[in-house]
Image (cartoon, rainbow, N blue to C red; front, side, top):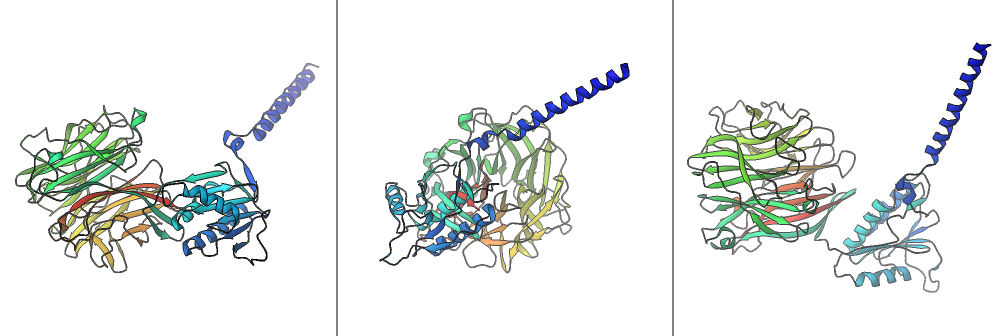
Length: 566
């Protein structure tokens, strides 16, 4: 009898738990996330896409892309037609239409009037009325951007077939100009949103306001840039810091400087000049790289800014030193020496700093002339606290002592591989090579790597690379450099969408002309710098360019803010 009673009690308990489980499951299935609750959907299955009959070819292609994206993401195949019509038969104001560009519909005209009030030439509008969706720009570039923005913000994958997500708003106006639009591939464009000049050399006294006294002509070179993201003071996050070096025309002295922009690169001001303090007999600070720590290293918290550079007297000695700043770049302390070398031909050069989150080490890559067995080699050291550094690891140290690799930069790609790019000067000329590894501490130093080329086109010297997840399944990898070794003078960049297995060419957003000014050509594009922002579709780009006037000896540090659009 007791066993039976126990049995029925167990059955009752099971039923209770089953009931509770079903209740909780039902709650979980019907409960909406905050994101789902905010969604506002619009059924466009009965709409027609209407394009301005005289649209530019870029808008025509953008319209095709819109149609194809709606079909692939929403499962509906909308008809596309132009706005041309028989004058005796006016358009139906009640028809459901997606209006592209400056169509003859009243809704397009009304939207264009709103855009005319915007001061910038490439402003665009996306407007959703009762039965019309207007996608329109003041310019062709503006309309192309409006199409891309509509696709990325409204045509979102949904279980509700035929419905777009209009949560982004029924009236959206963007009011900034675009300096240039670069088509990288059929599926990826780049807008050059801002171009500004940080500093320009024109006369012997060009830097008197910066250096304090007039001097021999100083050329601005070796720019490097970072967007602050890990600052304790939230107001500092989003600021841009750029560093550059003033190099005298006779290479007798160099000095570094730190510049700040609080408006995403439109305007700049100098805020600091890190000086050599560990060895007062060394006067110059050169070839620097700026980096923000994403996590704590030793006694340095996340957000500490590092300025790694070569302190050098070219005729006697050099060392790789690192300065640090705890106040967003305004004050600096030279706190460690990574490596020491001799003067020109025996020195240590061109540091590149990197924090590796997988092992917690701070890495410093650099070019090393100090080993008599090699003309030059690429090496690195690492540190757990930023002060005590390991022995030397090799990236490139070739058997032929006359082969000379140098000027390394590196990025980590979405497949977990590290991609390093460097110049390789030797028996085959001076070209840019690259190599990859899955282990940042192991690079197979005897492997020369792969030359970077598309057909007969290649570049040499001063390479830089960057990877962003934007641009497809494998993201976008971009490499730039200085010399054209076999080109047409356009100085293009290399771009890859498969982690460097294949390459295409793209236009340089900051063009320059090495043949224009013989006296400054060695300073032009020496060396460029990229940085992917907190928004991975934004790339910040610095380069040393020149003016187009052959009468003047002018080099200038230029900035560009680049926006990628899929």
